[in-house]
Length: 148
Length: 330
Image (tube, rainbow over all chains, first blue to last red; front, side, top):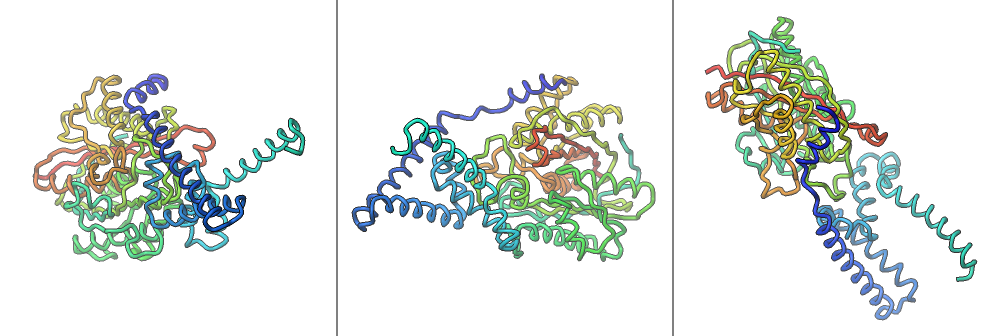
């Protein structure tokens, strides 16, 4: 059988993913997470009297902590598997990817295991996050000048 | 390449399975099962090694032999540098040949040993394979606890350690013939669709076996493939029909038999891994053949020769399959 024909045969027997449903679930859960984040920020800012800008950092840290903790408990991967981008795109996904890699390599030494493998998945997020921050920063500077 | 054997018998087997497999429909056919993936060890890799050691101990206990009475140990697993097998062999201590054909290692091991037995070079040998869900995930895919979305076509690596004892003593099941497959690559590079990767290799080796033994497919009561999964089986059936006009009515896939899809939903398309085929073949099928419920069985172990490095370099995934024909003595 030729490769082209085989490709058609494979497509014929491969079920289609329900992208609309996946997107809907991700939208719902991601949105809910956003609401939780906002509630947390409000809680920190108005109840605990933390300055507004710092409250955002507190909120992020709280979500990261919860993501890491639930990953360690061993059931967060099932949630992520269900919610997909709803939990991967927010900061919880970042925490989850670092924590799960750390768990995998925890017995292989602090430097050779934990240190060098923790960013296995998250590393590219950081690298391209920083690069794109630079690029957009320059673009912003060129268009609006330094004082927006 | 097909070999015929006159005097090779699969005398005894031992199977140990993990937590997901013990929820499956074949749980009663395993010799031993474990509730968690660590098996009392600190890491998943060491746990996999322990599976091999234990299955060999169990096997030798069953055949009433000591280690010094075994001529050869042929073993394979999925870990880099065959770590699980090599480290287990430190305590097993039988002359070792380590082999790798990914998930087709079990049948490859049986073929190599059977040829030596037939030639009279050895009087007996043991063959072991193992796979471990978490250690394989860690090596080939993402960290174990990472919940990256998986597609319905992805398979789930079985956790198990399986071993078999073969000799020229006439008991158990007869090893009748075997066909060595070739590496096939049909351009599939989807690591979440291993069934599509391996189906061409399986179809080639089945056809080759039938041609070289001059048999029809109905000669076998059962053709048991290794780990094609639900969708891989469909592809193989279609391929055999369109390419060779062979209707595979007697085809079963070990990967689709091993799990309970209701209790363990995250197995998706079915089981995979070197231990997948032996967990079914050395337990359930071996028992049925000894009782005479199945007379002639063709085991087709399928292996996706996937390397994360080559996949990242945008190469497609090659696959290989080996076939071995077993016959009941009664």
